[in-house]
Image (cartoon, rainbow, N blue to C red; front, side, top):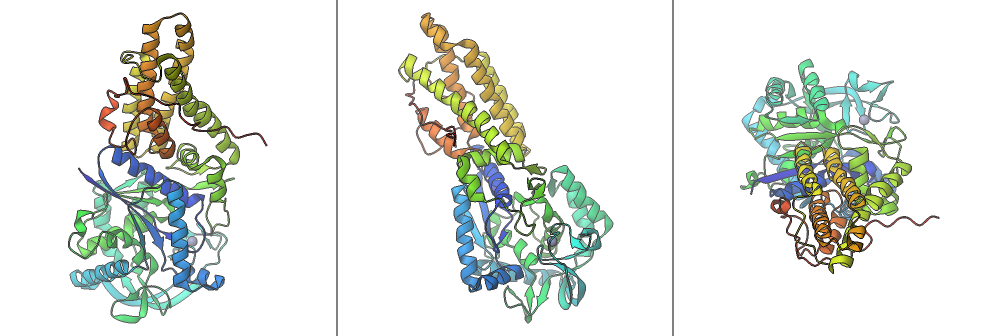
Length: 504
Ligand SMILES: [Zn+2]
């Protein structure tokens, strides 16, 4: 089984989880679930970025000891992602000893292999507390950070350790151009290439006298710059520097937001090159959830209650809506109206209705046993074509197109029922025709259950049981998609998968 090591960005523990975070975690979970369907040995990492200045500030403002503050937020985030049916295998917090060990070991390895790569100097510039980053002129709009238009930039001057980033510009360019390090989607790759082509400045990798963070090795006056340590979480979670870390490293996919491509596609590769470690294979930078055209994030000043969004139609529906409508590539809008429309059209009237009427007819006309027929119907051909379309989309991480392929089959199957009118076949006693229609509907539902499981895993599991299948999930059934083994299985009437909201 090939391994597939997948990570998401770790989130700052300075506020509650919101929809912006949720898009990333759900998208990554959808990919993790798809890779498991395809037979990969998936290792899925998520976690928290707890060493930032703004984390310590948030704790102070709340009047809570910082360690207690980060622990309670870590629990809150983890529980939120579990509630959204995320299946991460590991949960790293950058205050953990394993992460401190990994960070110190990487810095020491860099100094050991490339002694001239870490040097002391004075940094002077404008610092964005939202990004925890010094901002270059090109990133400043109207005197503010482009990502954080409501925060003042702070003028900062201090003695720091620097990392010789400039030295790795050519090699990083070569790795990205050659596809050795894949950056997607193309729009992000082009942005990264333009930054590299313009040339790189060395970066400060420590801060002076902070009370919170990882002490810089060999210099108690300095703290490791939070971004430098945050990136290392992907490596420290593998057990680095202990032997065996390379069973997971290099990562196969880093899923991140488009605002942090510079860190992941320029600084992180340079750190690894300097340390003589392999680069991740791919970085995927998703767009943002917009709420009436504005980015959803705490520091941008817009927030939609994630709990409210989950409670509206349940976790499966929220996953589906974010991946299908908001999308994982460009920015997309979230509105309650669109959420309700999609819920009704695609889930309640679409998948839910298809499942309930197909299973009800198999129950009524064939005593709840799927007929062994229907392998040459047009619905069968559509189902096979849909699997191919789905695979093409999901392999290139186009989750929206993957969902499109599956829900296209939902529409076609609902249309097939209207056109074949099984109730008429039953009334007229056309048993062979009826067997064919019900058999191909059973096979179609089986395929759909597998294909939709990365998007709506909870409901897919309910449908799986209703189809008379055993086992915990639809996973590991991939090879059976060619010939779904449903003939003769005893189906059950499912619970209503997607109940229609009762009018207020
Ligand atoms: Zn910023």
